[in-house]
Amino acid sequence: MKKQKVVIVGGGFGGIKTALELAGKPGFSVTLISDCDEFRYYPTLYLAATGGKRAASSIPMAEIFSNKNIAVVRDSIKSIDRKSKTVRGKSKYEYDFLVLALGVVTNYFGIKGLPELSYGIKSMEDAHELRDHIHKQLVDDKKPDLNYVIIGGGPTGVELAAALPHYIRHIMASHGLHKSRVNIDLVEAAPRLMPRMPKPYSKAVAKRLRQLGVKLYLGETVRSETTDGLYFSEGNLKSKTVVWTAGVTNHPFFSDNDFAVNDRGKVVVDEFLAAEDYIYVIGDNADTPFSGMAQTAIHDAKFVADNLGRLRAGRRLRSYKPAQPAYATPVGPSWAALLWGRIHTFGWLGWVLRSAADFIGYRDFESPIKASKHWTAGFGEEKNCLVCSGS
Ligand SMILES: Cc1cc2nc3c(=O)[nH]c(=O)nc-3n(C[C@H](O)[C@H](O)[C@H](O)COP(=O)(O)OP(=O)(O)OC[C@H]3O[C@@H](n4cnc5c(N)ncnc54)[C@H](O)[C@@H]3O)c2cc1C
Image (cartoon, rainbow, N blue to C red; front, side):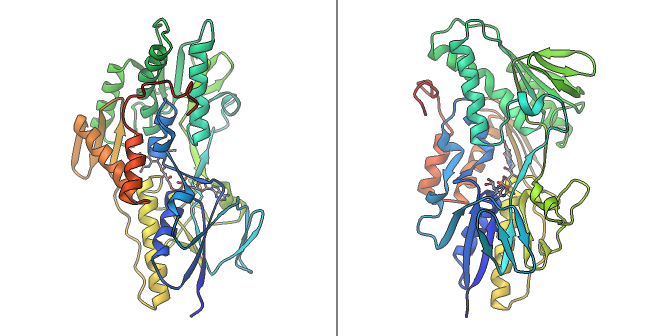
């Protein structure tokens, strides 16, 4: 039987997992197209911004797909021609089935100054730009501005705000700098942190952040950023380091190519995660109940790959059942908030469970040995300053 061409666009959680699942099934020729050569393990990206090792958040695609029968292509896909069943970037790719997993992009909600002036934490480049800026300020500037503002009280903002004090102390110690007072402010528009989580979760996280010295500004809506700082409806915060973690929106590919989307811009999919004939949309792009989580993207990938295998074998297709993810937020060293079904735990146990979940996360993509390498990269104190050693 002729092999069916599956083209997967997006080398993140959903795309890579779909490719790995299909690699073990007969009858498919699989091409994975991504605009990036590495797999970004987002859950530990805040570590890369605060002096952690790159290997914890970045896995070369070549490492994941060595010995796998998958064609991995670097390209940025811009358009689709449904009639000829092709997608196009620099080159043209024909498909029998198409899986789209392009992830989300940063949204500044039109707030003046933010796109040009704020730092982000959505890619390894973003994370290192922030890390290097903080390092340069502390080490090279005669009178550094030690006011750091993070916008967004969701998991990314919380993780970053909690990790910053430790990182700044580490740079000061590594360079024998006189200890100065540092202000870390976390701004959230909702009246509480992590507004999508139950109240006890928000409360425990807020308490922990305050213990770490992070000042919380809740119910504050940002109006603009200038080179001096951040402005609200009333008042402002002076800072030369503002990090925006508060908004994402669906990838523009879908609106550019006339996909049906919901009011949040997510692509409308049917019970098989198909947006249209032969086109599946998964992970952050799809309008599913738990879209926006890595665990959901992996779940979707397994589901679509399984159904493609069934289709090929002439078996009955399964309908999609969303899987409730576990939520775990690290808040500074050896502490995490965790909500897993009915289990709520805060502190060291939460951190242990979150670390175990990360190991399972790496294992979804790699052998136990390779996964251990990336997992252990996320631990431990750096003896030297990573920026100075050029890592
Ligand atoms: C800082 C941060 C921390 C997070 N922490 C957690 C966590 O702790 N737990 C959790 O469950 N979730 C977490 N998430 C969310 C999780 O990472 C996403 O839900 C997950 O990455 C979605 O997977 P995806 O495959 O849909 O998209 P992504 O993983 O974003 O992958 C999209 C891929 O498509 C590529 N791409 C984009 N455009 C194109 C194009 N035009 N052509 C080709 N390739 C393209 C991108 O480079 C990327 O490789 C976090 C997210 C961030 C940003």
